[in-house]
Amino acid sequence: MPPHPVARQAFLAALDDGWADPGRLYNPARRSRQLLDAARAAVAEVLGTRPDELHFTAGGTDAVRRAVEGVRRARGLRRVVHSAVEHSAVIKAAGDAAVAVPVSLTGRVDLAALESAVGSPEVAMAALQSANHEVGTVQPVEAAARLCAAAGVPLLVDAAQSIGRAPLPTGWSLLAGSARKWGGPAGVGVLAVRKGTRWEQPWEPPADVPSAVAAAAALRAVHAAAAAESARLSALVERIRATVAATVPDVEVVGDPDERLPHIVTFSCLYVDGEVLLHALDRAGFAVSSGSACTADTLQPSHVLAAMGVLTHGNVRVSLHGGVSAEDVDRFLAVLPGLVADVRAELGM
Image (cartoon, rainbow, N blue to C red):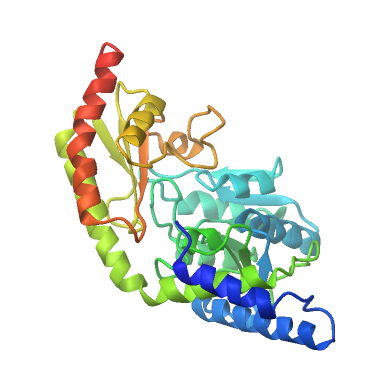
């Protein structure tokens, strides 16, 4: 998501008053502490947590790593149960001591398999995203939280795609997010840890006061407009889903058609080189991706799409933001069939 205008304004203002180390006692430092505390309280209010449960981190990946390592240290266990479609940050943090739970064709986690996996006494924690970052499918977090609670296992929710856009689920023990996803500055993340969760701070968090203030300002702004903006973007995504299926031959629109994020849609085109299609769309003025941005440079098929059992090549991921208009979507839908036909013709299809 592009930076929100208020994030830049808040950052520049905080540079003047929030430059000092908030851990010191002299006057400028106390001012920095006040700004940091106010930013923490503002973010906590949106997330539905207490301010003393919220930690600013060096980004979304850092938040996930802190969550996993902190629970492992506190509980003395290593195994992490997670869905097979989690973000690469979760999968890498879990490492070799992980159990991947399968998902359905639409990308929703298998709750029966999750319940079985968390029943082992060797499990330190479970992780389940609020919604998928590639196909937009919303996960049954609250049902999963009840299963984890019954097993005495803390649940980490990666809510990077949902914060500021959609209502957050309840029942989690830890929740991670990335300010960049809601229009805040890159390099700022949040980790909320519910009181009563066994977790140890694995390393000292950064104290970038201006960035934290900018992140909080952007979150308040997008949260205030979330209901109207979600309705607008959801209608545009529905138009893309229906029109692509009707106008592009041999295409598969993936993800849950109903239980989904309002701004993400992914479809896979048979007989198409995905990279070639993305370059063609880029030349036409459309910035889209293939699968997940976090795996786009690995030359490996999307682990999300592979776990779902859908086409892993020739896929296009469209993520809409506040600057996208209905006219932009109409133009995209008008040129897409011809571009797909051209790419297929180049391949002799």
